[in-house]
Length: 215
Ligand SMILES: O=C(O)C(=O)C[C@H](O)[C@H](O)COP(=O)(O)O
Image 1 (cartoon, rainbow, N blue to C red):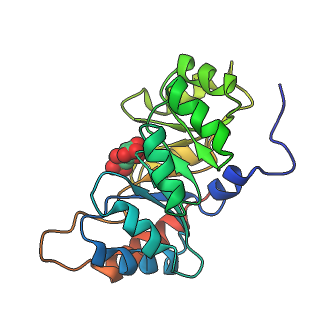
Image 2: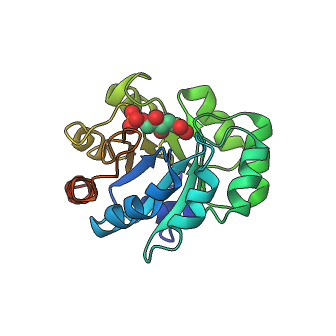
C-alpha cells in the first residue's frame, strides 16, 4: 500500500488549504460575494458551492473574483452538472455519491475531484477509477468516526474529507483521524431568511474558529 505521495495531487492541495471546506447553499446571488469575502477573510479559502439552487453556477463565477478564494462545485450528480460546473470555472468538484457514469466523466475531466463515498463498495469503485482522495458522506449517518477508523484497515492509502452532520464541536474528532485531511460542513454560514443580508461578521468569526482547528 502506498502512503501519502510526497507530491500532493491538485485535489489534495485543495484539501490542505484549510481544515474545513465550507459547503454553501447560495439562494440569492447578491449574497455570493459577501459570503465568499467573509469566509476567505476568516481563513477558509476553499469554498464548495452546491449546485442546489438556480443561482449556484453564477455564484461560482462571482466568488472566483474574491482574491484568494478557490471555488469548487458540490452536489455534482451527473456528467451534465460536471460540465456546467467546469464551464463556470469551478476549481474543484465534489459529488455526494459515485456512479460509474459520473465517475468516468470525472476521471476524464482531469479536474481536482472529491467523489462521494459512504462504504467499502463505493471506495472500491473510486479506486478502480483512480481516485484516492474521497468525500465520506453522509459522515455521521454513515457510521461516524468508528466507520472511518474501520475503513482505514483495508483502504490504508485513501484519504477523506468527511462531510454531513459535522459541527465546529465535533470536527476535532474527525480531524484527529490519520485518514482525514479536512472536513466539510455548512455550519459557518447559517441559513439566511428571505430579505435578510448575510451576517458577514458572524460568518467571518465562525470561519476563523474553523480555520483554527488543529489537524
Ligand atoms: O450537497 C451535497 O453535495 C452534499 O454532499 C451535502 C453536503 O455536503 C452536506 O449537506 C453538508 O452537510 P452539513 O454540514 O451537515 O449541512
